[in-house]
Amino acid sequence: MNEYDSGVMKEMLVKNGFVYTDNPEIADIVIVNGCVVREKPEKKAIETLRYFKEKGKFTVAAGCVAQKDKQNLKDVADVVIGPMEYDILLDVMGKGGIYTDFADYRDRFYKYAQNRKDISFSEYVTIMTGCDNFCSYCVVPFTRGREKSRSIDDILAEVEHLVRMGVKEITLIGQNVNSYFYEGFEFKDLLEKVALIGPPRIRFTTSHPRDISIAVFDVIKRYSNIMPWLHLPLQTGSTRLLKEMKRGYTKEEFVYITRLARKIVPGMTISTDIMVAYPSETEEDFEQTIEVVKEIEFDYAYMFIYSPRKPSSAFYRYKKTLPRDVAVKRHRKLVDTVQEIVIKKRRKMIGKRYTLLIDGHSKKDPNVSRGKTEGNITVVVNKKLPAGTFVDVVITDVKGVTPFGNIIS
View 1 (cartoon, rainbow, N blue to C red):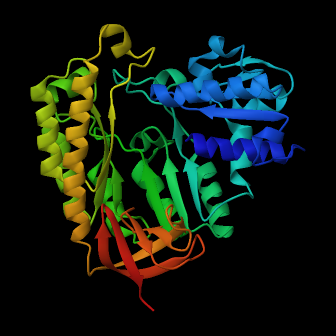
View 2 (spheres, helix red, strand yellow):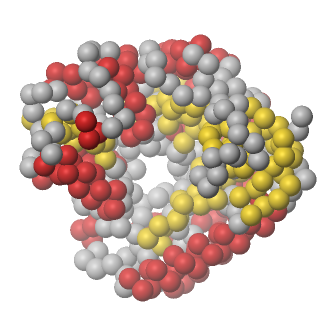
View 3 (cartoon, helix red, strand yellow):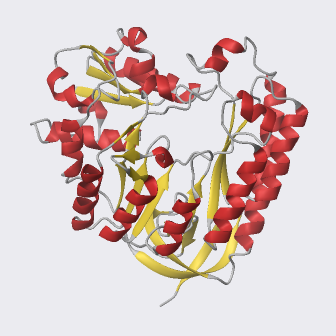
């Protein structure tokens, strides 16, 4: 969401006389749009602000880092503006101050989003903001506010604009897209309306396991331009911990949802987020996570060690975290387990045909390209191709977890 917000902020400023540069060293104004989901990116955002402030720049702290750390940012930022206050961004540039109310509108901000010109072949579209779940470890409700769904007409207008501009892939985003509800329209209704507009590829993230519905899977199955990919955060395979985390589902319910998704949408790939070393996690809890990972066989996973986040309820409830060596050991075992499963699944791709949307060159070799399958799996092709190109390939090899494909002429 920060990437989307940053793009719209850039659009607002450029259309009102500001000149953008890719080089912050020569800029007069530097905006740092920071995330606080984990400690490391939060610290990096503050360090970046301090660096440019000491160089004499006019610095703007934006996003969740601004909302969470507002009073502590006065020494490193001239303007501190939370994610729900971007409507007044133009008004506060050059003035200074702290603006972190949870405004009930983003009208001006979304107006610029609907008409942005600086776009790529793949773009995000925000459909809702905030979260009402208050998971024990999470600060999103405190930094993004309560759930607020965006007008369906605004969303469709933005999608139509992007399609006219030639965008090949649109990803609908929100803290919990499945809780979208606006004047009688649920997420399944919005998803179908977006599909009918006709972007070549549609994705959405993030889904909450408690709120995802069979009706959404049915819509995915009916429309070929909705990609068969589901990002569904597990967090832990322990039902006891899921209850402590206030996730609202059991491990059995999570497994059932993934089975149903793959049954209704054949070939559905499922990615996830998994946390280890939550303060009260026992060895038994952790082993249950490993068991669930083996049962579901995720196509890939983002895995991380629990990070205390103020003002989440877990921050106040648990005075100590698990020993670092225990956390690292569990994380390593989880990574190895997921890696083994992913390699096995990637090898099953060999000999099969896929359509890729090229998104750039390989990180290791600029003369080869990488692209995403319909299931959001990155494949490397031995040819330099422009980003935004569709190409059919046959998978010929897998190195590590990366499939390699030959272009079908």
